[in-house]
Image (cartoon, rainbow, N blue to C red; front, side, top):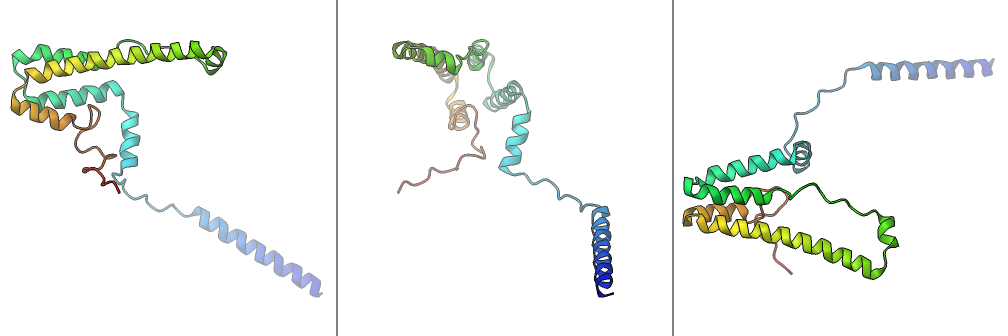
Length: 168
């Protein structure tokens, strides 16, 4: 008799726990809080937009802030054209192909890639200097302020501190 009473108590306890669990799961979930504008959220939204669209928006904002004249338009057009990639991205060698190269072949491959990147950087630098020399001193101040952290980051970029960190 004690054994059947103990068994009955276990069954009652198990069914009570199951009923409580089912009731807890049936409740509606709490309302999610409104999204907070955090750097991580900004990065996720930034990643969803097309890079070409982001570049166009940045260029449009800069052009509007500079208040360019008709005489400055050719330098502006050359500057914006220089920021575009020169063509489709180069095909990357796979790791196996690189492993099969001899050391001198790898060095030559790296030199060729370096020369190509350097030529692109030089083309962009020349176009930037040409635009800068066409700007008035006030426009140059605006350009300097906007480009101080590079063309991809404005003065309010979330990932960068506003002042340099002191070195210890």
